[in-house]
Structures are given as structure tokens and as C-alpha cells.
Length: 207
Ligand code: AMP
Figure 1 (tube, rainbow, N blue to C red):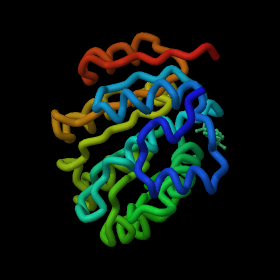
Figure 2 (figure 1 turned 180 degrees about the vertical axis):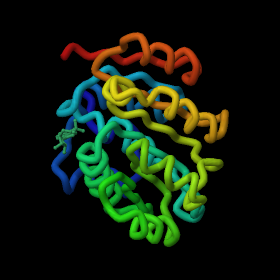
Figure 3 (figure 1 turned 180 degrees about the horizontal axis):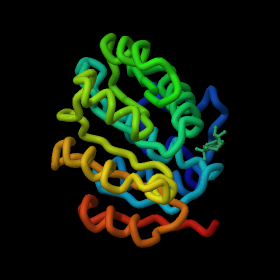
């Protein structure tokens, strides 16, 4: 039986997992975490409730540099509810790390999100419309975003966001590590994978 201790996460992350009572990785975590720690692009076919947030979140947190105040990672989500939920989860996983996680989503004042970005964000969890808006207002840049997570990619593309996701990816470094999580891999998701993931490792779980 694999435990989190076998995955080689840093002590400050392991402490948090112990405090949360996370002992064994879930199946998607057991598969995806080693691939992501090895630096591969990853496709995770997993639904909400499978532990997918920690599957991408823990490797991300492992590699972020707290001394670099640029936005090093972005997580794109289809809805503000998921954006808030992912932000809360990542903040709990970063409890013992000096990593700032900022949520940006529509339907909330943009000024307070701009202020949070100004005071420093290592990770930005975002809905598409709001992150586009903040970039066009020069409140954030993606030039140092070397980790990109597309969460619930199928939902995002069902909402018609393929061109926006493509233009956001084009603003990130070509050497980025890209992680795509999706319940299904239908046509538009395949387009995104073919164009933007490099030799991805595919972890498919039975629903
Ligand atoms: P998610 O699919 O990421 O939304 O996670 C679903 C729920 O499972 C959340 O409440 C997590 O806190 C919890 N969870 C994630 N990974 C583990 C784990 N390895 N052991 C126990 N609970 C977990």
C-alpha cells in the first residue's frame, strides 16, 4: 500500500497532510503526483470528489518558489464556485508554506482582486473572463506562469472558452508544465491536448 510518505513531498507539505488526516493518496493522486513531480504534462480523467485538487495542487506547491513574487502558477476553472473551492483547498494544502494563493472571478469587485495581486500572488486561481480582464488592465502578467492547470476542462470548453483558453496559454512560457483535468475527453478537449500538452501522461480513472 502506497502512503503519502512514499511520494517524496517536502516536510512542510507532509506535516499538513498529517494534520488533515490524509494518510493514503486517492487513486488519481497515486497516479498523477509522481508524474507531475517528474515534470511531465498530465491529463487526469477524474471528477470532483476524487481528490483531484490535491493531485495537481501538491506537486504545484512542492515546486513554487516563495521568494519569487511573480505569478508562477495559474489554475483556470469554469465557474466561480469551483474557483473558490479550489482556492480554499490549495490554501489549506499550503498551510505551512509561504505561498500566496489569490482567487479572481467575476461578480466580485475587481479592485480588491487587483489589490491582492499587487500585494503578491504565487498562484492565481481564476475564471476565464476575469483573468482576461485583469491581464488587459495590466494587473497581472503570465510571463512567469510555468505551471498551468486546466481544471474541469470539458466544462470550460462547453461554455465556449476554447479561443480564450488558447490566447491565455499563448501568454505563458512555452516551457511551462501543463495539467489538464477533465471528466471527458471530447473533441475540443482533444484539440487543446494536441496543441498545448507535450507528450502528456494520461491517467484515466473509472468514474
Ligand atoms: P476534490 O476531488 O479535490 O474536490 O477532493 C474531494 C475531497 O476529498 C475533499 O474534501 C478533500 O479534502 C478530500 N481528500 C482529498 N484527498 C484526500 C486523501 N488522500 N485522503 C482523504 N481525503 C482526501
